[in-house]
Length: 370
Ligand SMILES: [Fe+2]
Ligand SMILES: [Fe+2]
Image 1 (cartoon, rainbow, N blue to C red):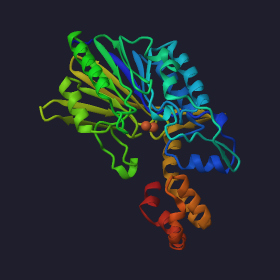
Image 2: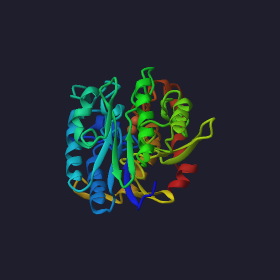
Image 3: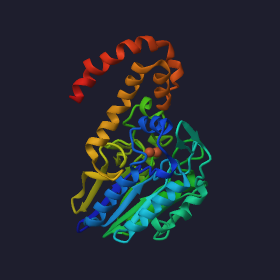
Image 4: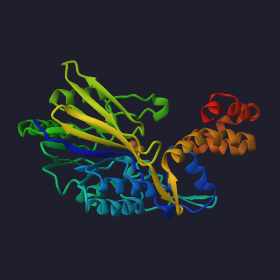
């Protein structure tokens, strides 16, 4: 399987949020201040990234799911327009994931002090047709899941084939694949081998856990992950690009039969450090190099992406401590915005109120920021 140097670009978890879903106020501030990734800034970050891709020599761009904030129709429509613009210069292939059909059934828009839930969303069985031009249309083979979402294969370079998998549900309440889906995947792995192609897998959820469940709420991976990873490795798949964790990392898993699959976890484009994973495929294998969005436009200004996104992460902790200095209700509200049930922390408020400014100024956090 020789290859003269196909160049590919992977990004993940773009989580595009439409500015039409927010107006200035406390409700948006609480929501935005409780998230590691951006909301209103996503359009500018995407424009900056897509502009880089257009000018680059990459052969194709892949996006590994969670395309939108939470499946809101307006977010999908804006995002797809950007894809059509990018597609004028580069082939673009996407998979969708659970945030693209609002799986928690809790879409939100923010105005003043209020949060409203009357936000139209796109359902999972609409997504395949909605993004038809970015994978299904070019597919060599396609599998429609029980949710109506799709997996597909497509050739993306000389002797390189993409196995794009929708792993939203395995039929047992976890991410993964039903048996019929798995059989199609195994057929595609065999077909790629018969056709002399290097096969790159892409699915949203992780096969290999590198994040503690405390951080990711226990839903980090596909269900029965060792079984799934073993079955993919034993079928002959060697590389899987994943997203979901919003963290960059490369891991490997070896099955009991001695077959290894390497997982390349691509971080969220709209969180620190706005990563873009470039892959060069040559005769000696995959060369992986991470690039970044350097700057983007927001509110009529040019923003340094690295500084801005790093400060956003620090602010996650600072905002809670600042809230503790203001009042008990502010402290609890800011914890609740982090999905931590702030009211349960009310009994320890008097202590935290006293300690907050010391924690901020006199500990490792203050040291790291200086
Ligand atoms: Fe995500
Ligand atoms: Fe996700």
